Length: 152
Image (cartoon, rainbow, N blue to C red):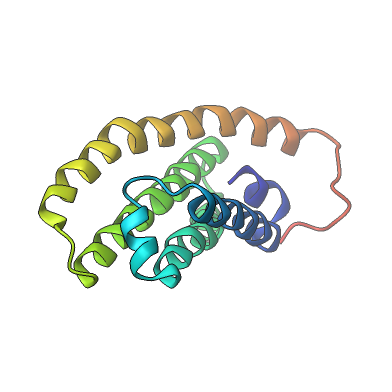
């Protein structure tokens, strides 16, 4: 998300694709117990879970930041980071639930697990992302450092 806010949406998409590729490789190589049944049913489902949420993070963060940046820069960055992080969490877990339903697995039991993941991992992850990203983006934005390309 910091990459998107500092370098622009194109760079954010490249970063998102890269993280999606690593996630997909990991899912193929050593799938988690929640991903393994989906992988056995349809590898395309796992590819969608790995890539689509991560490609939408920079789009959501970029659009929200552009709409909010006229006001407080800190508020725009913080809300963009939170939205980007929650985009990933909700889409990844939402796709997981959808694919469990499509392949006929017990999704009722999965709901409790996914709710716990959101509460105990997704929310803290989003908060930490905002706390860490805000000072980084502010510091780099205020510096005279140039990445060599015009931001979008």
